Length: 526
Image (tube, rainbow, N blue to C red; front, top):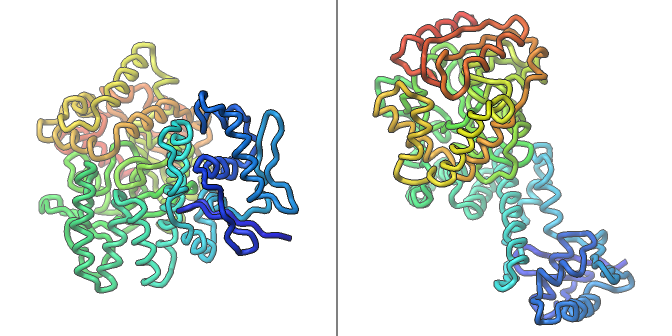
């Protein structure tokens, strides 16, 4: 039987029995072939006409002409181009398409794919249909842009996962270079490359990549990891540390893993003792939090007695910003991915804000892995479900402001969030939090994250929590109502509840409520 292969990555190529087949010279005809191959279903003729041809050009006649040209290259003893009066379809079941091989791996749970298969998939590089731009065909160009983004995301996810595997250092370096080439603004990709260059003795190239990485991230207004600012400390990979001697925080290691959908997640492990996992919550940044007056005292208190595992939310911080799925189920899957990557069997779990809902869902699904559960400033139902008409209107207004002002250098828009989260903070602390917002995510992601949080609903799970639980909530929290915390404690069996005298969503170090909260947390974990 004749073998047919169609390559869509880089320039389009068609082969039959290993020999090249000349493609039609018409760019629109080749674009039609690519579209049918990727779509792999019957497509209405009028849709193809509107996408590729202008009305004055007799689009139906142009489509018939293109189909006649394609039959000569794709049909042999088998008819692959199937058309009737209404639709057109390319029968692809016996065509080897490089895009489809990549998509099969990229849309699977790549954590479960063996290294040999990942290496094969990693070889599928290049831009989709690099020679098939049609600037005057807006519909086609929009489709092509979306497909190219899918390809870039799949390629990056495969390389990200492959570099975590126990492969030869030279091969790992090759993979890291490809990863950076695909996404030059991915901080984790650049840090991984720099670390490998350092470990293989390529100091000059490592320094050059640091300088280039800093410049690229600064151009994109993306936070630069500390590991990219200076050479990594001897003996450790991706080590960053604070210059604040008063903080007395040890070096922390920024690592990365892959979620089931291929999203890259940055996580950190620091400290000694029993493991405590802090579920991600919005407005985290692994590096920036290490130096932040909003988070530093939390981290310092925990790592005195515990091994702390924390990570950045997808679309946030050092984790992958370019992710298609921002949803509650994805947040829970991210927690699963991180604890598995960190090699944890049983641990204490700390949820803060919307991280409480993620922690609850995880504890219900995996009670054998959670020793004790701490919920701070959390809720069971997002504001679209629990909120009054007034609260929903206020939140909608905040979403509009987020779209318009989040990424601006002027922090006036972000100050609205800062004042809501930390009404009692001083001006210096407000500046810190304003900057955290700007660098933690993009305006679009900030909106998407807030929309996802608004629809969270774990109310049906509360009575199913079977692990010892401590709930803490600030009495005058303006972000999450005090009643939301009380509901968690009332409905989770045998949960302890601690009301804290504070106006802040996250406790600051100098307020009396902080000392009380950390004392209760330590007693609970003891």
